[in-house]
Length: 79
View 1 (cartoon, helix red, strand yellow):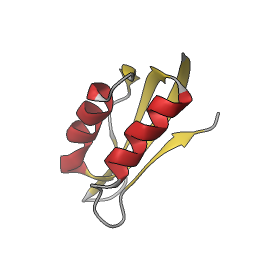
View 2 (cartoon, helix red, strand yellow):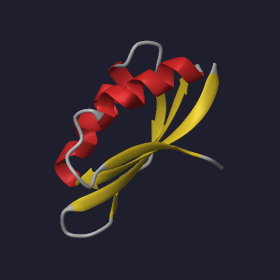
View 3 (tube, one colour):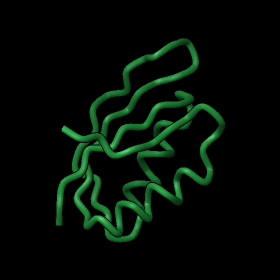
View 4 (cartoon, one colour):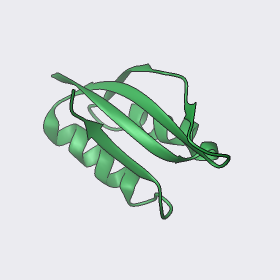
């Protein structure tokens, strides 16, 4: 298992749902999350850390991306 930093940027009202979906994904353990930071009046940035293998985290992110509205994103952050 490896730790991955994940960053979501998008509508503020989706941030909690995105964190929950990531935590509930098969084989993914959400280990920490920073409080969201405001990007503008409608968008936030949410940094999370998960523990998973590459296949599981990739599958979780792909499933989440399928439901994101235009302009929102979720990605692995390289340190």
